[in-house]
Image (cartoon, rainbow, N blue to C red; front, side, top):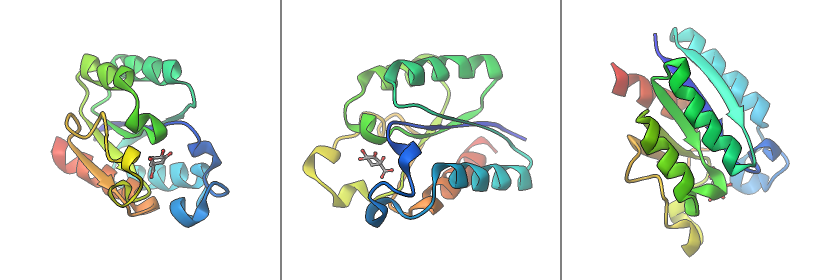
Length: 145
Ligand code: DQA
């Protein structure tokens, strides 16, 4: 049994209506419900959190240490390409994390080609839509085993 934390960054609460051609039809609630179901099936505990605010995401990462979090599943959204602060927070708490993207960022604009997370993540899963989250949970499980 592992203690997992799913964190979603800015604008991801708009999934379902936000650029569905890129991000698919599922809402964030549906994704969280599906991932909680998968976590339950595999006997893991999953907490979920979303925020648009960098400082709230930093605080949530800090708080993860008090909950004995084994692994963070993290879609930093637009902060992927800008946030040294969130990178530093993850390095500070020393909790391993999987970087997640719904879209295939490698096939998108130049400014999305830089990630402040990929080189310090366990790994990055990108381009599989909602399945990216499921693969990330399974990757975390295998990593922790
Ligand atoms: C995203 C990709 C980011 O570039 C973008 O800013 C997002 C979503 C994804 O899941 O594909 O908000 O992280």
